[in-house]
Each structure stands twice: as structure tokens, then as C-alpha cells.
Amino acid sequence: MAAALAVSGCGGTTWVRVPPAIDLARHEIMGVIDFSSSSKGNLADYSTQVFIEEMRADQGMIRIVELGTLDELRATEGLTHLDRAAYQAIGERHGLTTIVVGKLDVSNVKPAVSLSGGFSGISAAADVDARLSVQMIDAKSGASIWSRSADATRRVGHVSVLSGGVDFDADDPDRAYGDLVRYLAKATTADFKATWEKRKK
Image (cartoon, rainbow, N blue to C red):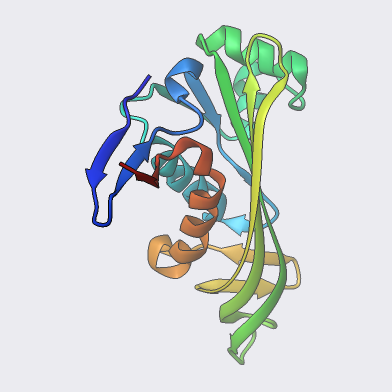
């Protein structure tokens, strides 16, 4: 167990670093399936990578296997959908203890900058509501052992709003919608982060 770190303060108090509520070392080796999304483009893949970064931030060296998208798992594992048996099969094949899955839902998209021309409905920026839901699955039993979700509303760039849906496909996703994704990733990884508490000496 990680030791708490104390930093002296004034007035007879001290700040104590409290270890994360969940020690991910107990859940290694972890597999992460690329997050699914209701939108097109690179938003889901980018969100997966940012989530992994935030998940590891206060955890040290955690062993993670990136398993790819659900479509890729269908092709390589012969799976039709993710259920208890599927998680168990994936865990056994890859030597995993825990599997992380997530879904990013985007709704109430309101174009902020419209462009006229032959592409009806295209916008360069939009205000969007987004919800990230994440679960940790025990690979041996196939049961959910942890879940967290977070919501945010942000203006994002490089979004195409077409009759067929929303397309997030920026060359620089961090600049285009990094603020939205990082907020959601930080909020859903709070249990994996250390905190600071003010205590009397």
C-alpha cells in the first residue's frame, strides 16, 4: 500500500497525500477495448488514449493491453457482442485479469459556425453534450466490478454535422476537442487518482 505523504502547512495543519481509492496494480494485467461512440471520426479513439493516460497518472507502471475496437475483436476473436462469455474468452486468450470498456455518447449538437455551399448542414464548430460511461469487468467471472460516468457540455471544433450524423475528424484532436475529452477522462478516473487532505498536526 502506498504511504501517505505529508506536507507541513501553517496554523498547526498539514496536507496529507491520500493514495488512490483503487489500486490498479491489483487488477493487472488490464485490457482496454477502444471506446465506442455514437459519432463518426476519431473522437472515440482519442478518448480511449486520453482515458488511459489519466488512468495511469497516479498509478505508476500499470500493465495494459490495448485490445482494439469491437469490430476488430469480432474479426479476431469470433465474437458477435460483448457479454459475460465474451469477456471471459478475451481474458483467457490475452492473460487478463480485468477488462475496461467505455462508451462516449454525443447529443444535442448545435452548429456554431455554418458554411454555405454544396454540403448541407456542415459546420466548423458546434456546442455538444457528451457523456462518457466506463466499466471495469472481472475477466474471470465476466462481472462488472466498477463503473463511473461523467457529463459535459463544450464547444468543439472541426465537427461536420451532416444528415447522416456527426463526424469528429480533426487533424489535431487535442486542439479541436481536447478540453471536452480531458474533462470527461479526469472525471471518470477520479477513483484512480491521489487526493490531498488538510489535517491537524
